[in-house]
Length: 220
Image (cartoon, rainbow, N blue to C red):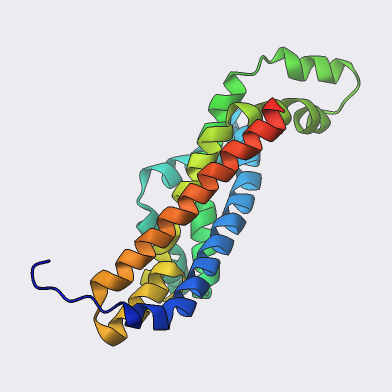
């Protein structure tokens, strides 16, 4: 097509590096979602207070995370904090930036989910002698995760794709590994076509796994 000659052998030679980059992408995505979920739950509870320092902190976090580019957040953590003497490796900086971003979006998802759960659920649990923390963890949050399950999966996929920003700070996740591999051969189309296919497969596996898990856990 258009006189272009494909050289796939160069891609196959570098395939182990791309697979290792994909592994880094997946671990980064999973870890950032775990951290983001824990932080988001705390932010959600703080925002429910309606006032006070905790509410202000949580609201500021959500507003900044949701209304600034993820690229800006990566730069601020890797370069901005570095200028202040806080230096992080590429992997840790990307993990912090992705977790920060996830927490902001998930906090808003959880806030909407909590609005769908009657407040009487928490009140009833408290009347049975549970502490406020136990009422949330044993009564409210299990219902919450069912309500927000698919928006949560969408954020997981979004985190997977956002991890590609690690390339700009030298991280060898899938995009970074692809960029490094193609820079040696200049076969940009072949390398990035394979990388795109790998992202597509990972995304579809997450989507399929999520649907199967939902059916087994909530419908079984």
